[in-house]
Length: 137
Image (cartoon, rainbow, N blue to C red; front, side, top):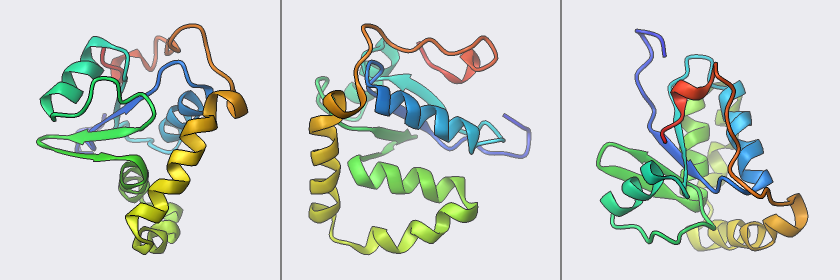
């Protein structure tokens, strides 16, 4: 993280989901200032953040963005990440105006089928040594 780039929160994800792991790698590629941190929902850090925000500890079918005392889940989390990345991703901002139940229904459909469509790992993805500092244990 550079001295001029403020932190953008911690992204919690399903560590055994190929789609989720691919999404984390996508965020890393598009976050050159390394503002985001990451933790799998299965990790002690992920579970502590869930508990600290009164979120269910078995919330493995959602992505969660935690920043201070605030959190976003499902499509709100995805749009918040895109917004914080800035750049070209801001063209997707108008989609956030769609009603949350509609956005989350689409999110839930993909989440429900993510293992079948994208596969599942036997264990959580281990980041490279260069990226390890961005992941909470």
